[in-house]
Each structure stands twice: as C-alpha cells, then as structure tokens.
Length: 248
Image (cartoon, rainbow, N blue to C red):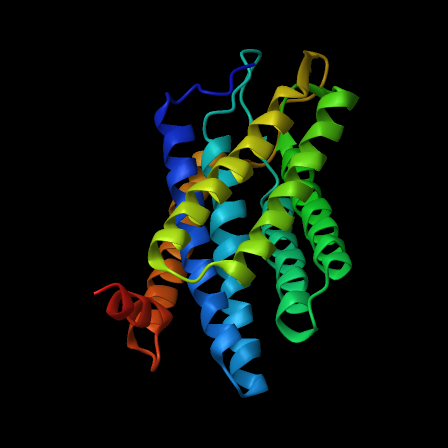
C-alpha cells in the first residue's frame, strides 16, 4: 500500500486546495454575517458550504487519494459513492454554518455544530474510502479512526469559530492556513489507520479508474471556485474589498 504513489505533489496540492477553499469559504461567511436579508444570508451560507465542504474538504480528499495505490493490483472507485461523499461534505458543513449564521451563537451551539459537522466530514472520508475497489479488503485501526474523528470535530469547530471571529485579511489568511493543516491532518490520520489485506481470489475490481474521474472533478471544482471568486469580487460590499480598503 502506498499513500504517495504519485509523488509529494499530491499532499502539497491537496493542502493548497484546502487553504484556497477555506479562504473563499471564510469570505463567503463574512458576507453572510453582513447581510440583512434572510435570502442573501442563505445564499452566502450555501456558497460557504460549497467552498469549505466541497473544495477545502472533499476536493482536498480527492486530490490526496490520487496518491493511494496498492501493489497487489489495480484500484477502482465507485463513482456514485464518490459523488455521494461530496454531497455529504457540503451538506454537513452547510448545516454547521447555518447554525452559526441564523441562530444566536453560544458555546454549546458552537460545539454542537462542530461535532455534527466534524462527524459528517469523517463520515464523508470513510464513505469515500468505501468507494475503493481492489482485490483485497481494507481494515482500520480503531484508535487511529477515533483520532481522525476527533481531529475532524476539532477542525470543523475551529472552522465555524473562524467564520465568527475573523475580521481582517491577515487573520483570514492565517485562519485558512490553520484550517488547511487541520483538514489534511484529519485525512492523513485516517489514511494511517488503513491496512490492506490482498486477496487474489477476489474477482478483479469493477469500477472507475481514479484518473478517469480527474477531468470531470477538476472541471467542476474549477468552475465552483471561479464562480465563487467572481461573485465575491463583483458583488456589492464585497468583504474582501472592504478589508483591502481598511488595510490600505
């Protein structure tokens, strides 16, 4: 089993994508807090969920999985389960963001939202792992799985807290870097829990090669990032523009 079969570019790119998604998501949530109309708050919260859940978490996971390989044969993926894991990531993050956007935030609600979103993120990771098809089986270290879930909860809670307290561009960049470390740390802790048991008696895997998923995933991911950035920079009272003006 290898986690970096494609080279170190996969973890580096995964971290970079996680930071980019986190920065965009924090900007969207800054806009959500500043909006007065409920519909606008909902829209920006959805954008935040797409950025943090879809890009910072799920796309990071997908890129990191490009380095996963087993020496016993080819690895395939279930495309439907892979897509479902993306929906779960966006959905659970969206629920967590909605709690801190539309309800009066208390420490209990913040922690509760973080636990809900974190366990959902961990569920996304392990559902993504269940999409793997090869001649063998995966088993997991219970202790490391528990640790990865704990990191996911901590990362989600930290992300939700950042959406409330980050005010300046410098703080937003620092928060994005920290979120990137937390999200990628959760992923590779979960991967460290994996043990591969090869079994040549199992039929050859049926599914989609991971590199056949690269083009559609990168196109969709690129479009999401482009649309979110365009919306942020062209909308009125853009939080990035306001911050830049304040710093200037």
